Length: 259
Image (cartoon, rainbow, N blue to C red; front, side, top):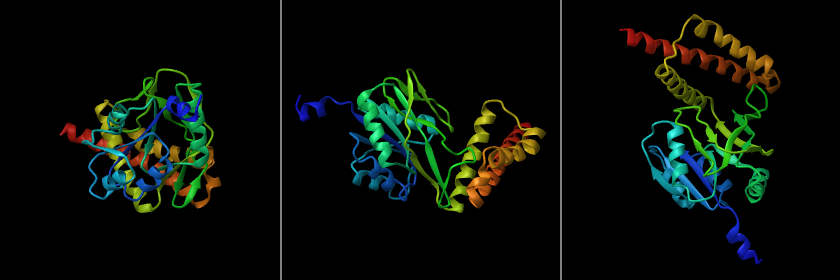
């Protein structure tokens, strides 16, 4: 069989990326997957140059109203035309070694989906403990075998088939500055509290007084965040604070409902 025929018959891959004001991160993300058959960017209301950057890199851009990360990613998957889907966040980058693994995985098709280890950069340091690594996430899957659930936050892929595991890291540049970390934490704790409230959960003494210090102990001592230096301590402390803030916001929602 000729090389052209082999290329024509190989499984295709669509990369789906959700964005909102990601002009700083998106170029790095798109450049790491420029080899894919299709690039899809689902934008949820950017006011910067995100959409223009996506067009410059050859991506197809869809604009939708944000109703949660799960619905937005599911929409992107629905638009894809390839056999395989690689779902990424705009602040992620596919490492060269992971590129090789992904190509081999879709060529062999031994499984219907694959998890990848995600390595997160916090204020310039790669965090390898604190419960943040390997942080396996299911991001590569056959379109006809997987789809995102409808969760507003902490969405996941529901896979109807076998799942394998890739070894190379997906690089996550989520927190380059403290200001950005606090901004994201504020957004996620609000979304988390609202979703918990809709699900009928309520915040009490245990959630506000016991959960936060337990979270710190878990991240810093049990999950060895202390081996990540000062940044490991900061991650553990901020994780504890996020737990407290989420449940404080949930309690505020309860009190508003009670009048």
